[in-house]
Image (cartoon, rainbow, N blue to C red; front, side):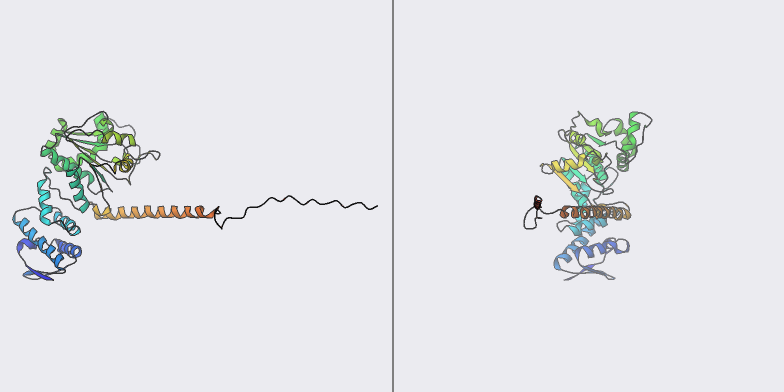
Length: 357
């Protein structure tokens, strides 16, 4: 099927740098897009061409209404759209417009990020598990700020285990807050990125936003709160159980972690791994798993994560191949292949020759 669309200034801005957005549509929808001087020719199956035509129509309406596409948002939305036939460009834009993230506009940049945001909206406790750079913490903080600004909660509580990443920092000078601040710096970064510094300082001073190690959570009941536990892979079993039982009325909890970067002593099992096993059948919870395709940092980060995963898989295969000969080298004890057992036969008794007369 072939379809032609009039080329207007509103639609032309959709193409992207070096027509990168058109390439996303071509690859994702299995269509051919041919740019002419006054029109755009679409060719493919009727269904795919109709979806592409809907994308151009939605974009034209959004552009005329003044919707701001920033920081590669359009490219990310198109990637989500081609992966889910039930999603429209206008629907993604309207969903992002309904959320208030302070001075930032935050759009999910992958299908898993979109599922993550929807899970936080629809569930009171969400686990976000995946590699570094997939936006687990940043999006959770964004949703917490949105809930606070929309008066859905009265405060935000950000917790994190105070565990060094493979090294011992020793004694840190200063007050208790100054000692734990280095461990909580990523949470501060996300806050200052979305809110004015003066507003963040005011919220921190009034305890509307509270940042503390997870050890300070014991004995508390958190009502009307949005609670985030970051770096949950470094919690112990006891700490994780303590945290997930702090949730009070009208509260949400988001637990984020990367199970490939556990810094606990080797004898301790991660509380996040245990929680995934124990709570996976509990209704009312949601688990969202990310992979390297969701990484939104430098493009090299995706390749680095993939290389580490492949290296880990190779090591697992090598260990398995070393164990297999040991399992099959022993003699079988059942069936026709049973090795014959050696019977004990007493030595023959030699008769002494009779003496001659």
